[in-house]
Image (cartoon, rainbow, N blue to C red; front, side, top):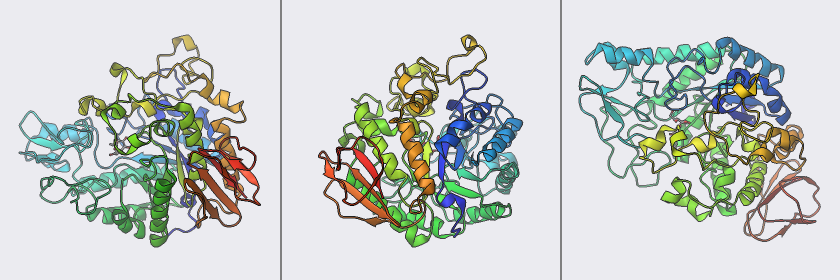
Amino acid sequence: YDQGAWWRDAVVYQIYPRSFADANGDGEGDLPGVLSRLGHLADLGVDAIWLSPFYPSPLADGGYDVADHCDVDPRYGTLADFDALVAGAAAKNIKVIVDIVPNHCSAEHPWFRAALAAGPGSPERERFVFRDEPNNWRSVFGGPAWTQVADGQWYLHLFDAAQPDWNWRHPDVVALFERVLRFWLERGVAGFRIDVANMLFKQDGLPDVVPGSQGGPLTPGLAAVPYEHQPELLELYRSWRKILGSFPGDRGTVAEMWFDADQARPYLAGDGLAQLFNFRLMPAPWSAEEFRAVVDESYRLARETGGSIPWVLGNHDVPRMVTRYGVDQDLVHAPTPEVLLGRVDVDVELGTRRARAAALLLLALPGGAYVYQGDELGLPEHLAIPDEARQDPMFERTLRTFMGRDGCRVPLPWSGTIAPYGFSAARDSRHARETWLPQPGDWAGLTVAAQRADPDSTLNLYRAALAIRREHPALGDGDLTWLDAPPGVLALARDPGFTLMVNFGPEPVPLSPHHEVLLASGPLEGRLLPPDTGVWLS
Ligand code: TEU
């Protein structure tokens, strides 16, 4: 399907609007802020941006609790600001993808308020999942997946209590989201990132979860939870794809779900979803064998199905790469309470070297790739956010046994030497409010301005890689061949004339002979590739 569609080999930059750039000085990012910083993205050389939710929302889950799907939250701007952003991006050849959140809405959505007011047995309640008795389902964020309302009924929320799940067997819900898709398509979006794309339909009768069942990628022998991958999903996404297809241009969809090959195959082989995120590299510890196993499996899956599974190394839900690769890698597989709480030793220098090598891997693999804002700056996770400043509902719902996801959502550093590092461009910076999450005090060297001026910066590594990727005929969609390499080293070739080597091991290894170095993630030792370094060769 869709051979040649722009999204098959696009590099898409994820913007978390609340933390990208703040044009009005209220301490939170906004759409005019994004518009004002498009130069950074054009300079970086990405094909598209994906905007995490900016819709009216009480922000109980950072905007993934949507109260109105067809507007802009006043703190982020207006619909006119959105239109200006799409136009400004188009002028720089950057496409805009928006987030659609179809599993649940905000408890402040007018339909949920109406359901509460109308009472048990009302048609308003049928758009959600109300029951007289809860079942044993647990929220993805921790705690029970049901909350009781004043009249005694319970409603289902697979995430926070402020995020009631829709009843996808209700025609009003189907019609609502068709309207939402058309609304943004008409405003010129190039596609949608579909939040929690695997959970919309729940198994009929809402059976209890059998103890030992698994969500996400399955271990053979374990039962699947009854709220993932229901067969009706394929049908729904096929109908969405028709709507997208009725607009000019290759409008895409990228589905957010954690999957294994068997779960993904029907979506990839079908004519529903255009793409599934490939999250499989994110939980992999820094090891050539583990990375190769993931790449192999995903590559085979994409070949077999003709589907598109863009690579991901970071997003707003997982700890930053620099920090993941900077801790004892034995901890990555078996997170201990210390890890979950961020009370671990991090070797930021080591993590940075590895994250830079990983970036060269990400951008050399066949297919598309996603880059999360700040990863191009090599930002580490901010582990030292005080408890009272944390915003992620997971922190409280896990009874503070997990630090939550705030540490990767910290406002970006743009310039200057002290917080807010140019994030808030208030007319009079003395009147700028504090940023919604605190920034670390030691990010002066990581700002965009500082890194522009440093030829060896992570920002300039990404720029160079993206520039080569645009020109080199071997990069983007296509095939890969593994090359023989010593243990601990990944070496792969792309035709014509491109080789990637990453040294995961502790000793320098010789570069493949007769090749010219196009780009290296760190200093080489003559013709030796040092540990934790990646290189592009031609
Ligand atoms: O995330 C879906 C999800 O289940 C996970 O990524 C989850 O956040 C993670 O496992 C926790 O460690 C999506 C959004 O990306 C996330 O930000 C939202 O909170 C969630 O949906 C609910 O809308």
